[in-house]
Image 1 (cartoon, rainbow, N blue to C red):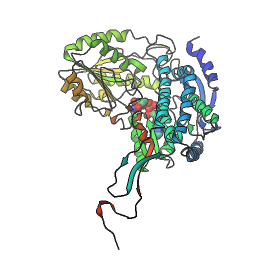
Image 2: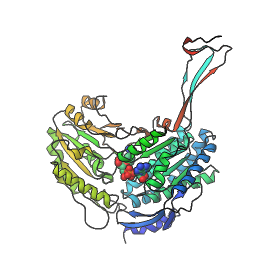
Image 3: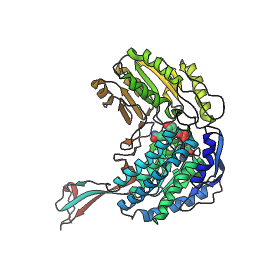
Image 4: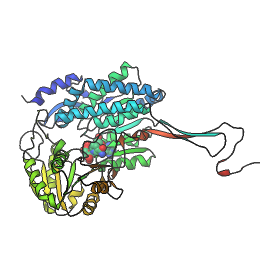
Length: 510
Ligand code: NAD
């Protein structure tokens, strides 16, 4: 019996899940009546358990409860809200192992990454607890005598959270921990590819809310785009929609939310480039490329998809990469020692193979990999493609482990190639030359939301603001001052004098 098969029933039991689960929660579990979907283990292609999704009416009920919960939650002092988030972090610490394993079972990332994803949730909880005491506004000096002027931040309101399959629980935590500390209630629409992890997390949140008699702020509606996704995006009761996923999804969501004057926070696809200069420490550059490009089977928004090699080291790096790609251990992601698990489903395998067909037609030469792996599950070979120029396919995000390799003469050329794609999420340069590093980070350097030196493109820490520019959507989540996206700013002026002077010296006396 494979490890996955043994873990299947144990993990379901650990989170109170059965073979058939309701897909909506609004303080209690709804008896949902939408389409039934199966969550498939991508390593075996076999079902783990089923979920009955929410209908449009059931979504509506969850949304109404979320609106009511907000009315109470916003009146809780922010540090008291932080205490609920702290307890959620604690329960995640206690359940880290099981939840990490469930992530691995459901989406196929290797166990250390499944566990790492839960650690990211815990880190986000810790960060948000601190934030709950630091939702600072500024004070300004008024131009009018005996006037005081300041700004304050209020909760934004009930929030819709749409997440992608590849970070099925961490992305919820980026949003939910901060949104809760800021005073927002929320509805989560997870990816239908990863419903079980969302059920498990919601059960943990339910325990914390019930133990504290807190209003139902962490709600869930698993559903399709037409039953849940689109109604949520169009719902004027939700002033903020935070959506993580493909550029295609973000363009639809961004336009729909803007049309109703709502606020959206978009975290979309990337097409991340990594530059290796002749003077780089090639040992760490190689390791950075391997984790960035083949890690998580190329299914990270920050996956390294384009590698720019300076001509002096290009041949050596390519040789090392081809050798290393041949020895990446691919297999059951729950098994220790596995470095690369499967893609999420057959459609992802098909789309990778189709992309490679087009790439060959556009002049790309496959140096390593390039094939699906026969047998159960959705496994593919990590693939290296050499190109002479930035072909059209290299300007698109194929959500699979394909790395395009290009050579360049000087840094100016590399930066120009690097920035010549529609996406702008993550970027990296490997160099020991201070001038090259600073040139890459200058405002005329990388145009991405994340720019690293001697670190790969993936694996960001939560303390920084996470997100990207251009087609990546412009949103920022997690650390720094990202909390401001979840709150509304109010500028207040108090006149404590006996006159009523007008700003800019305007006079209006009878
Ligand atoms: P996807 O766009 O197919 O789906 C993401 C979510 O959006 C799902 O829950 C889906 O049901 C929902 N959705 C799709 N169309 C919608 C619509 N019109 N209205 C409302 N909801 C809709 O993405 P995916 O395949 O699950 O995930 C992979 C993609 O996500 C990649 O492009 C990856 O780069 C991106 N991603 C980005 C980040 C980031 O922070 N920038 C993080 C993780 C993943």
